Amino acid sequence: MTKKRRLIFAWPYIEWGGAQIYFLAIMKLAKADWDVVVLLPQNSLPDILGYLKDLDVRCEFIDGASDAKPAPTLRRKLARQWARIRSQIIMYRHLKELDLRQSILHIELAPWQDWIFFTLLSMRGANVFVTMHNFLPRHSALREAIWKFRLQFVSRLPGFHIFASNHDTRNKLKGWVADKFQERIPVTYTCVNPPEIDEALNAETDTAELRRSIGVSETDFLVLCVGQFVDRKGRWVFLEAAKKVVESQGGISFVWVAPKLPNDEDKRRIAEYHLGDRFKLVLSETIGKTRKEVLTFFRIADAFALPSFVEGLPIALLEAMALGIPSISTNVYAIPEALKHMETGMLIEAGDSDALADGILDLSRSPELSAKLGRQGREFVMRNFDEREASRIAIAAYKECFADAR
Image (tube, rainbow, N blue to C red; front, top):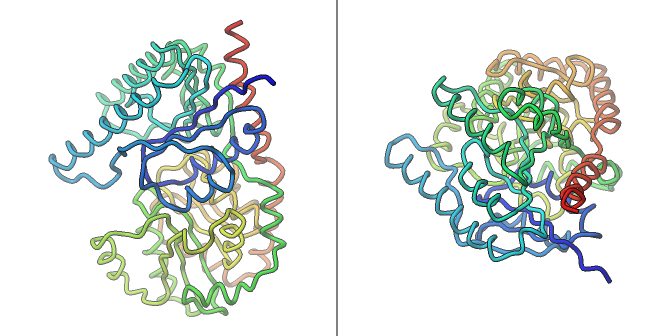
């Protein structure tokens, strides 16, 4: 029997999100022909560990993790930078013990920031892939010039590859990486698993009981968001819109499902919106231990809202649309590639809580509009965003590394 080549997925943080769901999709298809290994920090959140266990892939752990907490002071900035550097040193030491020349490494790091790490891997003959889910955020001219120089550099390293998870990211990389490199970047869309979506949609479940379990009225019009409870996801825009909706109309509730609960400072700010029982922040590990259970939980929603400022093409939005839930999101980055205004959902501008509130009220008052957007959104996503196709593209690119070596 021919020995399987090793496929390593790695990330240096304990949180998880759409990037890990994207990785899981590739793992499902790859594990028949590859020895799949996942390298992640100790103390990673239990729900992502459960998903990896269900997939029956081997996990190896590093004793270090990057720090995603806010850094308002110089001391905190330095601490966060040290945590990032330390986690990469530990990860590199772990990786160099493996036969990287005969492996594929698909890692979740920022090449414009972690260029030294990628240079060291290239020097060891590694075949390294990075998926960019969105283009770089705007910054000062000096910092952008530095980032561009670094991306131009790493795009010329032997064995370095980028996937773009949408066309917006791929197109915006033009001029930031070597021209021939940019032309060869494959698009491996953030996608959904259609059989899994249909299984969750058709599963026998008591949505009224699910609502009661988190303290939400079974008769309310319920607006759901799923994702990390962080600024770039538009958390305060969501709550500001919720406040406006609640003050305007009764019978509407809001739920945000996140992989980690907010800190005390965030809890105090949430309380300032005076939403009371109209807003619930739910820990994702409490709503299900499997992807099917989590997707089934989505069905409590009458609408889905994700008012992000910075986003690629979020998996939670695609999953909500695929489940037929009328969705509202922002006109940023790749979101318009899936969400067409008043065709497959509602598009608003980032930061516009008035528009979000108006969209929610329109959906709550018009069952016909909700049904149309839910139906057309589901059809579009199921037809155009199948994870099996994206995974095939990724695996073909992995194999090409060894074909080129012959």
